[in-house]
Image (cartoon, rainbow, N blue to C red; front, side, top):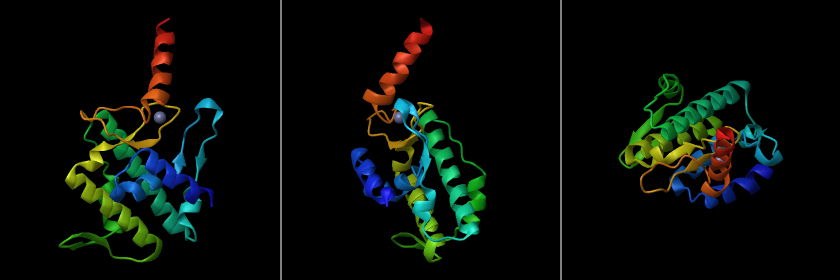
Length: 172
Ligand SMILES: [Zn+2]
């Protein structure tokens, strides 16, 4: 499966902390990168494997909500989509002394695990570094390693340069 071969390399490239790698892979199943003649793709069906329509709908809602948060992380807005309360009720977690665990098994359990990772990463501050690239033709979710936590691009040399060149040309 292309998804399984390509994604671990991306997580490694962005030096994503281990607990957030599954979340990184999940939110980036939506690959909206269209620069340089790329075609955008949605690898969610590969990620899901065997699934029911309900599970697929739940996965899409979770991904959309998480991507809303990574967008807010870049902008520094404290947006907390109301959708999360609804998702929290549908993807319940079990509290343990050493963290949070999924209640269900199978695909629902995998989605609950992702949610648990985000809750824990929010508590330890690492989630604030998960951001959507600010280039409209990229939108790749990346991990911001910069000290001031103010990175806007998944790659300074790539998207950062391209956007600066574009802004420069627009100014004429
Ligand atoms: Zn980018």
